[in-house]
Length: 110
Image (cartoon, rainbow, N blue to C red; front, top):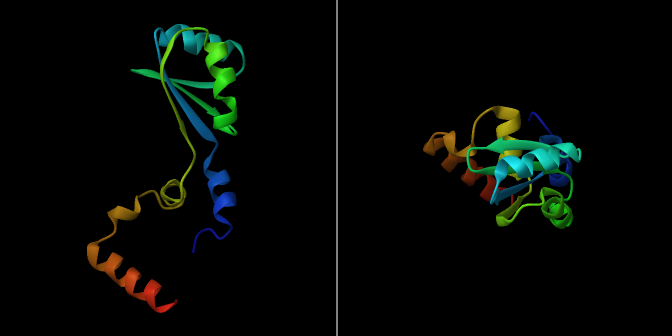
């Protein structure tokens, strides 16, 4: 065990929500969002904003971007993200026989 807490608290350790935008002008959107103090990362096709409660922030982000928005996606950290954060690998990276053993033990605890 490398971390023990509620799922919500573990997800908070990993980070905030991300709001991904694909706009008519990603460079202009990123510049406007950065000027407004948002934590922005530019991608080859879009802009990502790290922010708490991404769903509530979408309208303000779009308004601040001040360019036509073609696509918006909000993503919250998952328990898979927590596992990756603490172990450096995905759960799927485990050998199939180890996963089968985990399922057996998890099934017996019920």
